[in-house]
Image 1 (cartoon, rainbow, N blue to C red):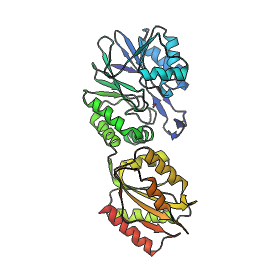
Image 2 (image 1 turned 30 degrees about the vertical axis):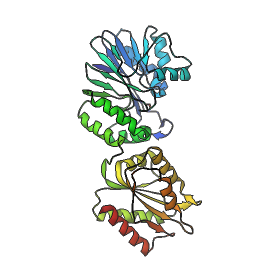
Image 3 (image 1 turned 90 degrees about the vertical axis):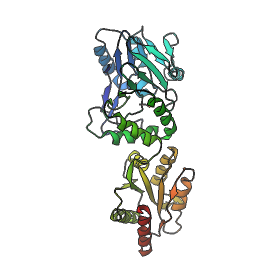
Image 4 (image 1 turned 45 degrees about the vertical axis):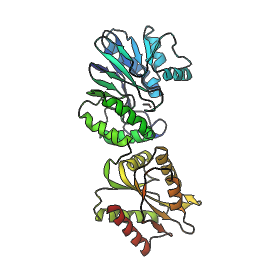
Length: 379
Ligand code: FEO
């Protein structure tokens, strides 16, 4: 079996410069000790010494023969040169595209110390035979994942990863979903392609590059990945995303949430886009099947947080949902028209017939509109 030599990052504030990670981040790395010794991936640049120390302990006096690089993003590739200097007899194993990226990142592509691998190529370590599987755009184009035929382990690169250090006590799905939709969400078709390849393998353990090793109840994780990457509905419920300048749009949202609950909606989630973690709201939009967008007209357009939110959705291939709109505008309301236009290219959206148009503050007509929308969404 493998040995774990990864590190926990409890200092990072924003992963990839944009995702808050209150429970830190894990950069995973693994070693297989067989007749030959293979190391999977390196870690972030701030953990060179710790990682090389973990590696030396795991090696117990032996020397690595191979460093397998599955993904060139710097959270995993930053220590390639340090490794190659520390172990001058080791061979670097990766995809052709990775070596091009290495040249661009490090000015070096290890031309005399490398092995280029592609789809279904194998590498024998002795008892362990490794098979490489290409996984383009999960999450970059050069990605490979690796299947160990002996132990039936899939080394899955970023796939099946999550935010959070390994000592974080938290639900896997919550932070894996936020990670998935934030980082890989645009590439559902490519994740589906990888899942199809994985379905042909007998997998007992998944070793991702972030988050825990998964070894029990793998069907649960595979099912979630299938739902997410096919833009399916994971949870029964309705999500309302809103912005409110003076509290009037918020009142409409609160009334709608109350009516939806009264009418039997099993779960109503409301998110104030100005005060929520955007990545959390984005994952909710992909999690539920019905989304209500509520915002104000602003500069003949829509309020900035809503604009940003819808852009996050459309760039990730938002589709297969029921959507409804609440707009507010004191003199020339255009918010609903703008929001609909922004979602024009999203496939398979069902647009609710009952929309809500507020002209500053809720009035009796609006209350009737909200009641009708709640009826429509719960029928
Ligand atoms: Fe964990 Fe795409 O890097």
